[in-house]
Image 1 (cartoon, rainbow, N blue to C red):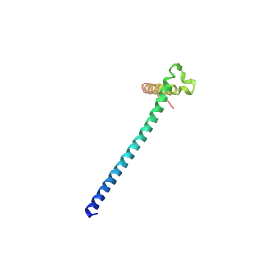
Image 2: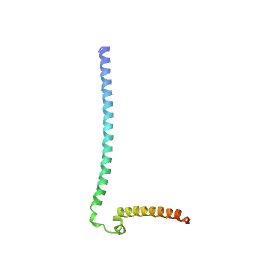
Image 3: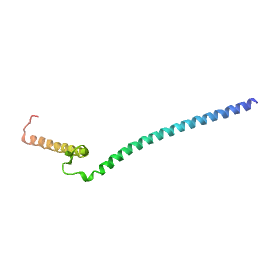
Image 4: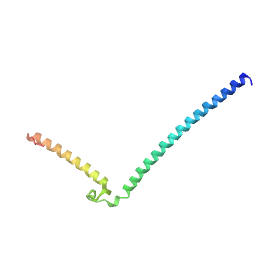
Amino acid sequence: MTETDLIDRLMKARRTLDANAQLHADVDDALDAIEDAAKEIERLTAALRYEQHQLNRIGTHGVNCWKWGPQHYECARRKIEDLEGAALVYEQHLSQKKVRDGTVLDR
C-alpha cells in the first residue's frame, strides 16, 4: 500500500466519521423534537379532557350553581370575578361621593 492509498483511506475514514457524527447529531435533534412533541400532545390532551368535561356539564348549571360544590369551580371563579368587579365599581362610586361631599371615611 502506497502512502497516497493510505492517505486516501484515512480521508475516507475521516469523512465517514464526520458523516456519522452529523447523523448522530441529527438523530439527537430528532429525538429531542419527538420528546417535545410528546409533551405537547400530553398537555393538549389534558386541556381537551378538561374542555370536554366542562362542555358535558352544560345542562347542570343554574342560578347560583357556584354554591353546589366542587364541580362548579369555574362558576365560583366567575362569581368571584363578578363580585370583585362590583366591589371596584362601588369603591370608585364611594370615592367620588367622598370628593363631592367633602367627607373622609375611616377604613
